Length: 433
Image (tube, rainbow, N blue to C red; front, side, top):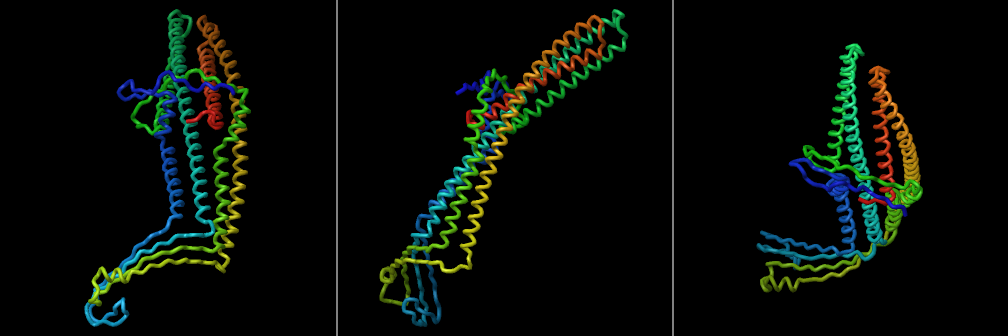
């Protein structure tokens, strides 16, 4: 198993200023796993899934209900106990407790419980997928901020070179070797470099805001990320990680669980063809003030009745509703299986595309390293030629801009390789939140 050295940060999360928050990538991920709004939403969905399992389990319990009614009757009325007419004022009371327990309903409750448990597993798979997506996004934002900070350092260096060239030009003008209008070109170049530096700093502020929202931090809380240490990757094992990522693919696993539930829905639909058997039990009593010989308590005891019953319901014909439900459930199961196969194709295509992107990024990085070395050598050679008057300002600025662009492209290529490789590690379950 190749060894993967994940991110080692220079310092942990801490507050070193009144409001500024210093973040390592490790701590940024830790905060995101706790505070990200998308992950919080999946936690609520998990609670709903637990509730659905509990609801399915409770269907195996009996139901118990109590009932009662009382009345005051004036004039001619019917005594509920003797069912005879009474021409005087009297009071009545009826009370009872009924219980019902399902003994058999075609295994519908059993299959429903299995479906809810599968749904819970699918929800957990989706939650892990959401965590992986957040982990990838936090990492990409972190790397982008790192790239922008490196670009700021490059832009600041370019500004310093522009100011140095401006000073050289002023000296040559003072010595009479250049016309005065050459100075304005360098002044314009300095202003351009200052504008470029300001634009990159504004990009940094915007990316910091995106990262803050991703971590669910306050927008007015400034953050500063710590520098990443070296990152080692073994690209010779890329095929191993691609196969591992496909075997542990979360979207495919979710689709398979959904397909299993679709098959269980067929069994639930078939339960409509089977008889239903319920066990019932009841306690009932009554009281009437018409009877002067028995007080309230004695009437309640004497009128107490107990009922134990079995209720059997056998379906014979229901306009083919159950038959149509079974047919619909089978079609839904076929659709779910097709969706599994489609998901396998999609995920396979995406993983192979990721592999190609990693290989292309590695090739671009090697190309940009060579290009940067060539641009660096060309610029310093042109700078020396400019100092002795062999080339003009425009040629020097073009060479300097090529050097600057080559440096930025190389930094971007390196960060792209790291970002893509981390994404593969996450998808292959080699890095967990």
